[in-house]
Image 1 (cartoon, one colour):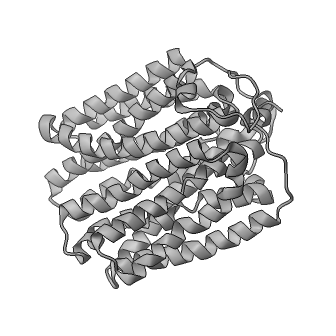
Image 2 (cartoon, one colour):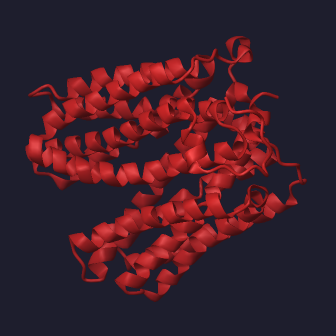
Length: 411
């Protein structure tokens, strides 16, 4: 592990990649993200090929998100109860088997969709273990840069995963693509097993009674505010949920839809790079609340029904401002005891996934009755009000000296 650092020490992307354990976690994460998208594409194609039903294909796709609402938080407890490397390897191992079963010819569609739901459900303890382990591998500004790297990887991996996934399915077939996906989980498991040092579970976690993670987080004003700032994602990600109708409103087709979907991730990459490289470590927390307000506020410009080019700039700018999530993530690590850090990250990830799915569904329903531009603008307006309230709540909290994530992880 890197030595204890102060928040004034600057780190770069090269610095974090010099850490062998981080390289292993990063590679496993990249492979898993691409594999997840490949599985979603393959199953959606298989369902549509056999049913010719857009509705059933959409429902199959939603199976990749629904499990977060059903058991994601509870399964994330495994990341605190057992050694985190073992949890990650076990999750990948089980997912290899499940995805391989999905590739069996003639498998009933319902069984296939249920298997996909189980694969997605196992992503909860996997992500919780990875997120909780990262502060043990990186500290100080290295942790912030590592988180930035993971966020950029997620955006690139999702975009590439869908694009490459579609191409792979078109070339080799959906079932063969599922076999390839099973291979990505094998790679991920091997990289984590041999590239990451094993650490024992937190001693308190072995004997402590089961905790109510929702009460723990929301009973603490600081944790509650940081968590809710993290859950702002649905408000500014809404253009993804109405990408097709938004493009149609502007008389665009598949190309315009793809541009709408790509604008947000592209802006997010730029914003993350700028925030992590140009903003001094000790100033990031000060910028968190203002940027959180700006993120959805920019979308209010969509009330004016801007043309496609202007809309893409708005979407990119909104997601660029969302780089405040780096500061929120770092503050969250500092505030959560390591004994239930994995469970807390599970709650954070589940809230984002569930909220995003529900908000997208609501936005899609609203877009069938009104202009998609109005829907995006309304989401931005509501998000601005929520973010402003959270910014006020954050300012009212007593000022606390900043420390490095490692200090919080080993105090």
